[in-house]
Length: 300
Image 1 (spheres, rainbow, N blue to C red):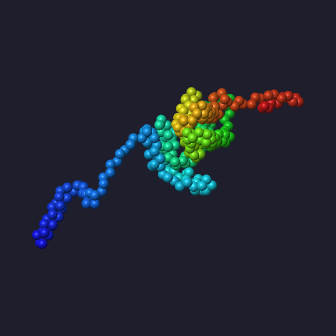
Image 2 (spheres, rainbow, N blue to C red):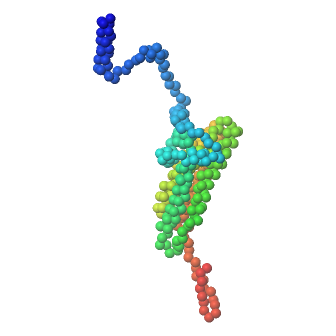
Image 3 (cartoon, rainbow, N blue to C red):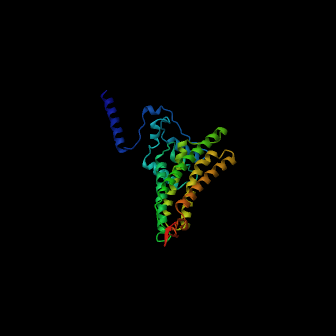
């Protein structure tokens, strides 16, 4: 009996010495030996883009949807951090083919924080820089009378916020209607549509700041570049939703989006960054008026 105990202790000592020599060796329990071994077979997707999209959707945080009439619903639209906002702004500056802005950057989590402040910043830059650019360009001209254009702040706010809300509303309604007509048409939620339009306007902020330089051709070029980058974001986001629809309907929708985008850029240039001759405010001429015994003058 003693010899058996000594043999058992000797086996334990040998096992301890073996583990000391190879501390990183893997061990296998008796229960693991009886388990069946499973092999994982990875199947290729239809395309790389669809695989990335599915992965992005799986990694997206699943948020509990609140009612439209509740305060929690609107609070969730501002529940974003700085890294998310910066990532979406970078994506709107450098649109990449095959990278859908909604699927790859919003990830079922649209926000109104970025679009609201982007529109507010654009209102400020386009009015302040436009006023400053006119003053710099016309300063010293004998026929130019400087006067602050405060009314342009109101005009810019109405135009930019209307474009960022009413156009997405019309587009969302059109896609909802087409989805009821044809099952192959996709759509986004209204807040996702507003979010795409809001972030797409971020390219106009640095371009309007650069328009302070008094060079007419340079202003046109920089605003056209911003218009193309911003419009490319919209096309990449909404083309997958209508590409299987009737070709005339799909092309007509994209053409309407592009036309409104062009009108926004041209209107911004012509109204806030006027040509030198359009910025002139001629002084009132002096007209003589005859009276009894002498002639007086007054301004018309």
